[in-house]
Image 1 (cartoon, rainbow, N blue to C red):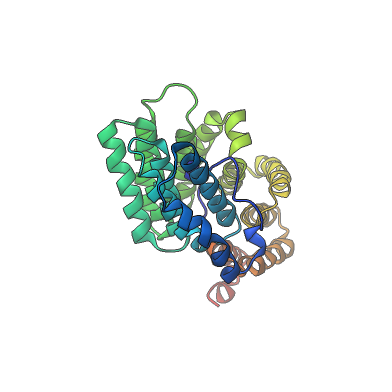
Image 2: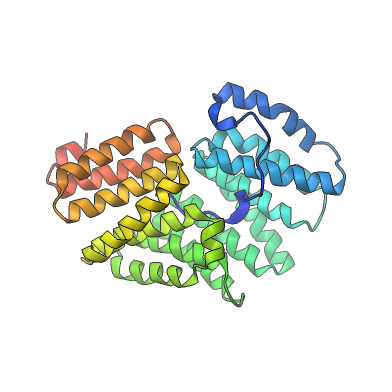
Length: 315
């Protein structure tokens, strides 16, 4: 299922109009041609920084709408520009963006290659936060590849690397939230809930404002884990918060995360028909975006098994 990504796709302002999320794939590719070409030129330092930030923000926007594959060339161009300034922190952000977008487009091999580059660079430069972010992103790629046990190990490495950082640390929050999710998929519900609650402790108002989708995924994880350990009333409280956050986010990823968690809670309180209808609707929405499809399918299969319809789960 979807995981909390590093800030690699964060940036203040996306590219100016047209709104790429409203264009089809061919239109988006055409609109990005001049920007990609400019990023491959030798730019003055201030222009280069602004161009990289804007490109990564646009990549984030496409990612949030399940169109990661359309942003990969843009992210690669941003990385090429960042590398013109050795020692720039934007190299890490661009490497993270390339890896996250590749993983979300099911090119896990390329994703791990990008994150391994960040891992080697962070090790060489003794950058604890960047090292932790690289491990977190490797975990994301492994999770998308269907290897939750390996992903859990990578997230543990991220948490361990971040212990050198005093005070609030976003990557420690992200690593904990993601490890909780993989533990849920491994059936380690009690341990997963403990890790998820540690992520809650790491969450600051600044993180919540900056990375709203990460908060949505944490609430989703908590709902699934609370239901799994029988703390259904607490799960209901989290569902209410999750639905409100997803409505504010207005993105397909947020909507699907909220729908799957809400359905898990509805199944737990006996509203089976409501839950299955909600999951069917989420699946129909996810079909428009392959990156979301796996989450919706996994939840629907589990729901069919829980209500005693294994034949539908296998269909």
